[in-house]
Image (spheres, helix red, strand yellow):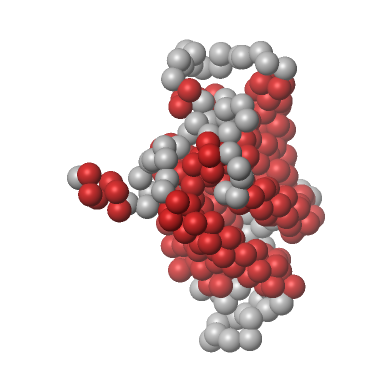
Length: 287
């Protein structure tokens, strides 16, 4: 068991060897660049290979009028900010602080896996391989969920760009790509299911806000709900979906403020759980 723990790249460790740190620096940087380059490239260009319909990322989004279609401007801003924050996380791998380097390395394997899954998703999505794209999202959701619950106690410079930002997107993308995968635009059943499943975003966000006081998840999901709401409003004014999306956005944003303001002012709200003496129960430690 000890040998398996030693060779398992996802095992939790407090310290890392010099060679391991160098490996993380190289792989983290390269996979992040791969994720960024492919995202930017296919935002502006369609692939020229493949047997199915080939479209740019947001052209695919706009081509299918599903219940989870997003506004590409808001989604682009979300990803641009996320990529910048991830660059800040990578910079900490080169920090002079041993503690920060070890913390950054501890989530490095999951971050590398996230970058590779995102790369595979984009490559499949723009080529209309939506079933396989959904498989990549599901696998990444498992990867990021494991990261969240196994490594909950890191500072904001790790938590937002590596954990909550990608996890919030991946959860919403399960429905976004899934709705395209089973696309039935004129189906009453599809619209009803869309009206129902959108509320899972609220439930998911409130779970992290109430149980973990994680205001970053609440904020991330409120932004993505806004992206859905804006797109659905311009698609069909007389409809429930955009009303539900904006309601979810508002509730999550208010819940986020309720938790974030006391945290910023040094006051602690006990929402739905007793205080934990173990710091690892809190996902947002002070830097």
